[in-house]
Length: 212
Ligand SMILES: O=C(O)c1ccccc1NCC(=O)[C@H](O)[C@H](O)COP(=O)(O)O
Image 1 (tube, rainbow, N blue to C red):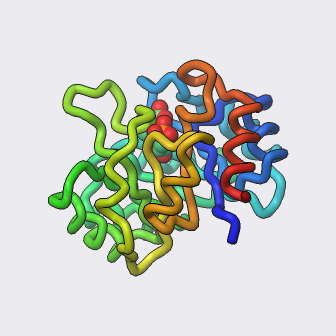
Image 2 (image 1 turned 45 degrees about the vertical axis):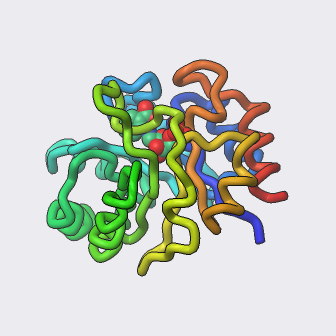
């Protein structure tokens, strides 16, 4: 069965077109000013209207307040919010209720001790993103191109759909899927030629690996 792919951190038409042409099921826009992939509301809105039906448009935010979320949701046609900060389970539930969109909560994994949080967030979110925990002092809370030990989640399942993320590439995707059983995956750095610059060839190779 093919693996569904989310291409995250799209910031221009060339990257978006490459993701759509290759067969991505989700496209992600990063609303985090310190990111090399950050987009303005205007840019995200202009890109989102070009996304064909059937591909989910995801806004990635980090500890965003309701005013910020109100503006993004009002101006960008979206299908999902991805929460990539320190949002508590209660805040995830609040955002889901207030903003009327499905919510995917990213949870960082580095060791067994992190696994209970996956269950806690699965209880309140529509999906969970099982990602690598950023190293101490990392400039970004995600999108660092780092993988975690996939054996930690081998055979584990949650009460909601989940996506594997963190350091995935066209080269390691098959192993990641085989080890974890993931049916959905998320990638950003691994399909770039430089931070924030999406590479159409690598996007195509990633989707080929996912569908192979
Ligand atoms: O991509 C960013 O710059 C970013 C900034 C702040 C929070 C999260 C961010 N990215 C997360 C992702 O792109 C993905 O959801 C995921 O973590 C995979 O990233 P990567 O390891 O680069 O493939």
